[in-house]
Amino acid sequence: MAGSEVRGEGCDDAVLTRAAAAGDQRAFAALVARHQSGVLHLVSRFCDDPGGMEDLAQEIFVKAYLNLGALRNGAVFRGWLHRIAANTCIDWLRRRKAEDGLVAGLDDSLADERDQERLEAREARCRLESAMTVLGARDRALLVLLGIEGKSVEEVAALTGLTPVNVKVRAFRARRKLKAFLEKDYA
Image (cartoon, rainbow, N blue to C red; front, top):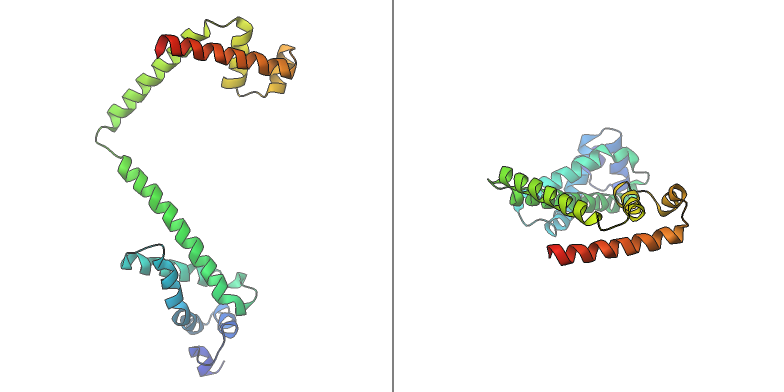
């Protein structure tokens, strides 16, 4: 390849992409120089921290370099690069949101919160067991099979000998009875 082609002068993206995919780092550097401002502009729409923008741009170009072999038509390098940039920015936003949620949720009283949650779960289980006593054995079995064991209506019908419609109706009535009991005694 001629020296001017390696530097990217007078070369289109297709030529530079083929050279970069073949291992020519100067060709890839020319692609970075040519497209860096466009990538930074796109990144700026997701991140307003200059340091973060540079990090994201670097991550985008690393991904592009590692995946050059997957690009079949070098002439579409710009669009392909911008897709990588958009996906990388979206992933960055998801990671940031998850990290922010974790950091915001941290508290010195985590052990106390877990103990409180366990206590509330035990109380809820006791309330449910108490409420289940207002149901007949068959209705209790239906709700356990459907709600706790996660069986389908058809599976419950086969196990109980009821029709699927009858299973749905009985389960609906049993849930309504449970709700009324819980609202009356625990509201």
